[in-house]
Length: 98
Length: 98
DNA sequence: TTATTTAACTTTGAATTACAAAGTACTTTA
DNA sequence: TAAAGTACTTTGTAATTCAAAGTTAAATAA
Image (tube, rainbow over all chains, first blue to last red; front, side):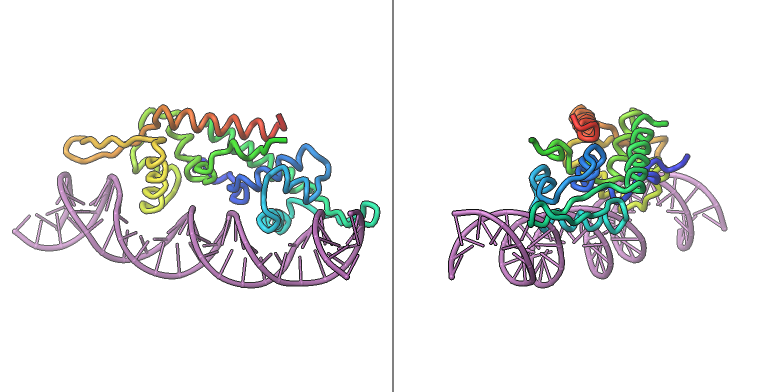
């Protein structure tokens, strides 16, 4: 009698944010440009989704230099990892009708 | 090098539509009111999501009488089943980084 | 018989979200 | 010096979501 969709995380309603998370869960650290190329997004669109994820503290940003060129990389946080896994679990349970 | 989110179905970006599909994939036929109660939605909200799913031909509607009372039930179509499974497969592949 | 209730919508309107495109600041390479 | 790359931010439009109210038709209660 309990609502199956309640345990699903609203933040992961988006294909793009799911994509970012699943890239970051297997790769320690990924750059803005790599994400942009992998997901085939415009700068603005990617930046805004990354921002949503960062607001939620699901990922953290690291600004560094490669030589003298700035390079921004994104990494998943512990909370992000947990939330993403919880979402996937909820999804699986829902689908299997548990 | 191919975009992992490409295979995800935009229609299933919504928690509610995922919920409807996962209910209908295990239950032959479910009534409007049962869905409404299970998912805790308002009439209008449920109706509009069901409409989106019906437009996509992922589910079909059956209007019948229980006694003299009308009863609308929803069933998944073959296309709906395939599309939902394809989406879940794509999700799984994406997550596992295949 | 009149009123209320239930089912299953549709319509309306507001709020949120998504997105492309353009702009920005800074750096590097030609 | 000019063009191009990185990583954004801003702007504006379009699409989406949702609650609330309205609708139609039948059922039941007063």
